[in-house]
Every structure is written in C-alpha cells, then in structure tokens.
Amino acid sequence: MDFLTWARSPWGQDILAHISWDLFWAALFAGVAFFVAHASYMVLSAHRKRHATETDALEAARPDLPPRIKRHSLPARLFHWVMAAAMFVLLFTAFLPIAGIRFPWVRWHWLAGVVLVTSIAFHIVHSIVWLDFWSIWVGPKDLPELKAEILREMGREVPGPKPGKYPLGNRLYHLAIVVTALAVMMTGLFMMVRVRTPFFERNPYLLADSTWGFTYVVHGMAGVSLVGLVIAHVYFAVRPEKWWITKSMVLGWITRRQYLEHHDPQRWPM
Ligand code: HEM
Image (cartoon, rainbow, N blue to C red):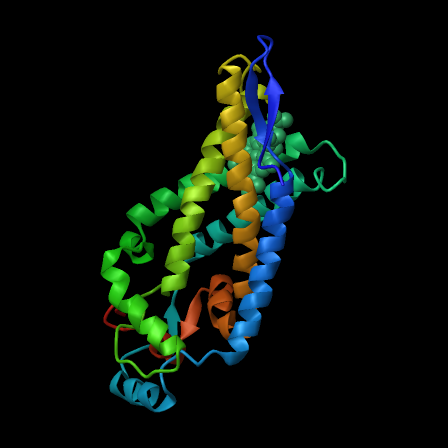
C-alpha cells in the first residue's frame, strides 16, 4: 500500500502531490473494524455507572437538585449540529469522487469548509467566554481517573474519581478532533487560494510547488483521520448505553438520576 503520491516538477524533481487514496479505504476499514471490536468487547464489559443503592443515597441527600439538569445550552447544541452537518458534507464531497461517484464536488466542499471554520470560530469564542473552558481538556491530573476507569472496566468496585461534566473518553476524543480539525481547516483555507471562489483572485503560485504538495498531504492525512474519528463518534452516539448523552445534545438536559449515576457532583457542581 502506498502512503503518498508524487509528481514531477518542471525541473525534474520529485515533489509531494497528495496522499494515496488507499489511505481513505484503510481509514474506512479501521473505523468499521474498531466498532466491530468494541461492540464485541462490550458484551463482556462490566457496568461502569454508579450502583443503584449508592445513587439512591445520593438522590436522597440532594433534594435541592432539579429533576432536569442542564447539560448543553441552545447555542452549544446549534453549534454541534451545524458543525456535524458541515463535517458530513465535507467527508462525502471529498470521498465520494474517490469512491468513483463523480460530480462537481469542489464548490460544495469549500462552501461546507467555510461553514465548518465559521462554526468552530464561534465555538472557540463561546467556550472561552460563556462555557467552563477547562472542563473538556485532559492532562496528567486525570491519571487517577484513568486508573479508576480501567479498574471499573475490569469489574472492580473502586471509589476513585468519577468524571466531571465530560467522561474521560469524550475528553480524549475532543483532543483528537481539535488536532485533526485545526490541521484540515488551516490547510483547507490555504487551498482555497488555488480554486475559484468569490473571496479572492485564484493564485496557484502563492506557495512553492513542494509547499503546496505538503499542504495537500497534511489536508488529506487529517481528512482520512476524520473518517475514522467520525465513524467512532457516530458509533458511540448510537450505542444504547450512551443514548442519555446523545439525547442531551438534542434536548439540552439530563435527568437528576443520570447526573448522579455518571458524574462526580463535586467535579461538576450544580
Ligand atoms: C472533514 C473535513 C475535511 C475533509 C475530510 C477534507 C478532505 C479533502 C480531500 C481528501 C481533498 C482532496 C485533496 C487532494 O486532492 O489531495 C480536499 C481538497 C480540498 N479541500 Fe478539504 N477536507 C476537509 C475540510 C476542508 C475545509 C475546512 C476546507 C476549507 C476551509 C477545505 C477546502 C478544500 C479545498 C479548497 C480543496 C482543494 C480542491 C482542489 O484543489 O481541487 N477542506 N479536501
């Protein structure tokens, strides 16, 4: 399997052109293999939410909590669904032609790219100014939580920390998406200079051929990574034990019991 494709410059040098499209099929295969492997593993996995008796006690001790706990504000939910729609249009417009379905994809692709970039610019400002910015990030401070989660996964009852607002897996996923989405957006914005748009004069000579090649390769690498990441995200969203999280991205709230079952009220106080 090839990873890269090369072109020849007018001076006879080999320069990078694109990623090899084999990588797209590899990412598709990896995404599907992941969900088959995970779904099989989940048949054996132990339950990870708080015990019913422990949750009953917590519920009795917190009569002050409302029956519905707000998890996502309306602007946060709108951002999520606009970004998701843009992401799907980007993935399909990029990869359908590679799969043999030909249509004038470039215009739809960059238009969806502009929607993605705008929605993410909004999300960055929104999360810095109005949301609890640090609640989604992971770092060495999360090692005790990781250890507790692994032990619970193995069926052990451990008192260790429960997640705050976001489970550890969601925070790791967010980090992966931040890295790949920033790479695809920054390179995509440059690549818009090479195609006809109403924003600026087309200029394929803005960068040297080898720099363009590198830009297309980074864009393609980040793009195929997003194939795997999006498959994993949708797979988790539709798993029955995660419906309460998916529902909260539609309705904005979770129940008081779900809050106490899955979270550490001290790390996500109400
Ligand atoms: C899910 C995110 C994205 C994926 C999977 C994706 C994928 C791709 C792929 C596979 C290509 C073909 C690259 C090549 O020929 O080497 C491409 C081209 C392109 N993409 Fe994206 N992309 C994404 C996001 C974006 C964004 C955010 C923008 C703009 C802001 C953008 C703008 C472009 C442009 C202008 C081209 C070049 C078309 C051409 O030169 O003919 N893309 N994209």
